[in-house]
Amino acid sequence: MSSNGLNTPTTRSSWSRGLLVFAALSGAITVMLGAFAAHGLKSQLPPYLLGVFETGVQYQAWHSLAIFGCAILARILSSKAVLYAALFFAVGIVFFSGSLYALALTGIKWFGPITPMGGVCFIIGWVVLAVAAWRSA
Image (cartoon, rainbow, N blue to C red; front, top):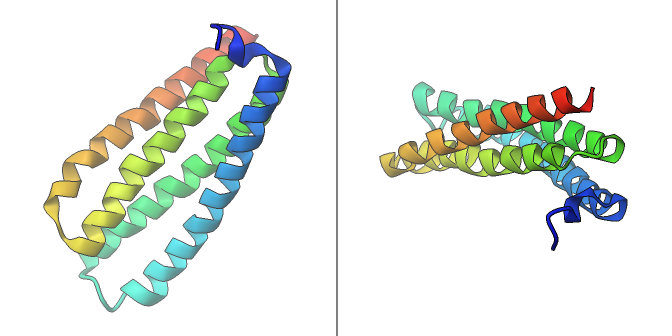
């Protein structure tokens, strides 16, 4: 793919569609995991680990919405940075929320050090989105 490959309308539309699907499925999973935490885990986990799990759910929810927004913006702006921001958000969900879910459910502390990598991805995604917004004006 050329360096301008993401800037063609067809490619942006394809990426946007994929990101919309990812965001929608992630949103559905977020609701299921939130219900699982509230109804299935509440009596199974100590309050600290339940809070860890719920933090993963909250960050997944917010960043699923962010991916959705990026996917819509990608159809309006001719900036591949918006798509990169969404990809950083998606990777952040996997690392940040995924590691918190694994830590809460298994108690294996090894998952803890993975969480900050996801947080860094979230931060990069927001900065990249800010740059895309600034350049679009």
